[in-house]
Image 1 (cartoon, helix red, strand yellow):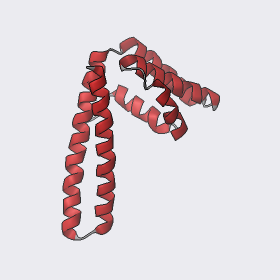
Image 2: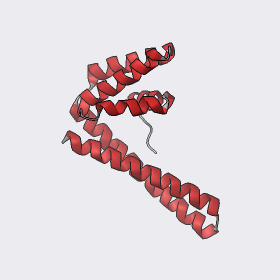
Image 3: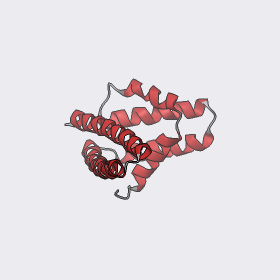
Image 4: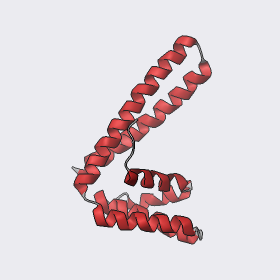
Length: 136
């Protein structure tokens, strides 16, 4: 896998810290595209963090929103999505190879593990491709 940029690592870290209810709340932003959607999703997460009195998360999301508003443009979002798609495709190739090895070795627990990972990666790929097509 590629090394993620600092911006991507911050965004991924922020998303990983969020409970699923916050991620679900971001669906209110689905009618938006590009940078406007990114701003909306961060603002939604920020509101939820404030509601939960999670000041550490509030600070991080405030910085992320400021950074996004200062630097976001659809061309950079498109490039990030292309890079993310490449990363997911690479992960899919690695998991496919690991799945075949697990099948050959008869390790059913590993087979199930890699099948689940492949399913998850393919869903992520579909989501990223949909986002990319909405930016065109």
